[in-house]
Length: 180
Image (cartoon, rainbow, N blue to C red):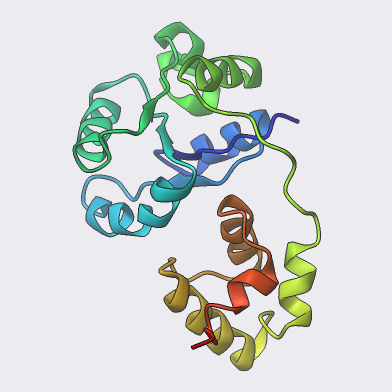
């Protein structure tokens, strides 16, 4: 598996699934042009740490999303797939139709950096520390994501966030109780 340092921004669920078949990375999906403002703010910690790469469909809506994201994050890498690599049934167009090898090639050509595999036990460490399910886990996750400036997330997604930011659960927990 190819591990990518940058967080990847795609348009939707199927695009996200296609990228995750090709590489291991933190992949964000937009909520379209209408929900983009909230998305842009949520991506800031990831842009500051490992960087962002934009991979949208090679069509007008994809170009508009790319332009809006780039206006806020001008240093975001620009990964693009040729139209013929994204052609699906009945002429439909989308990243979800691309071959995993084509997605990997586009990401590397854009300048994405490879990284070591993240720790496999981040989620289990979070659960053991009380950040799993139930009301107490939800309250703990809310406090931690607020302290780190991250979007609210269930435990598996929080583990992905920490891995993308190269934080161990112990390091992340130190943000809850900083030493004076």
